[in-house]
Image (cartoon, rainbow, N blue to C red):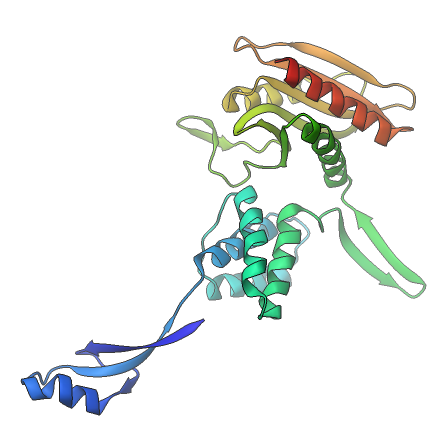
Length: 282
């Protein structure tokens, strides 16, 4: 958005207003300045934050070609670069939609950003049209994360808890106080504003948790100070499992579960209910 302002300056730029210059300046003996009308860009910082965060998310995607990257670079040059926490950007997008009732193009832009930020369009991420139909390639890692999230959302809501998807992505929270890699757990269950459980969804069939995955989830939970941590895998048909791996020196209980391939929905809800029950027990 742009607005026009009158500016008194010794370096004229824009339209010079001679009447104002004579009346306000030359009549008082000021001859080294003039009054100009300048067009000033007025940005919406909140909208720019949503756009900047969306571009940051898009840059993380590995399937973008050079053409898409060049378009992102062009958009980056046009829009003020600023980013928000992922969860914050989603909330701001929801609020902004109601502010642009009379500007459908901006509403559509915000809706697209909202879908990208929440991962709604990251499950089916590549489409290819064929003569006889459409071929769609699914991001199964993402789909599994979303499935675990939906089960936890349903279970957490009934317990007055809140499950959030990648809430610390691009938040500047590092593994160590003095630095290290940024942490990015798949799902965090909050009890009020405090992380109560950290969950990582692992799209692989397993009978037990791997050491690398355990180290990862323990690091996440230790950094965030959560009371619980869990890894959620797939399991062979009929082979559901749920185990407590152990308890850290800080008192965090760590669990792992396998959801059978022949009853994914039921298995996910069962795992989510067990995790929620552990949080309620404290």
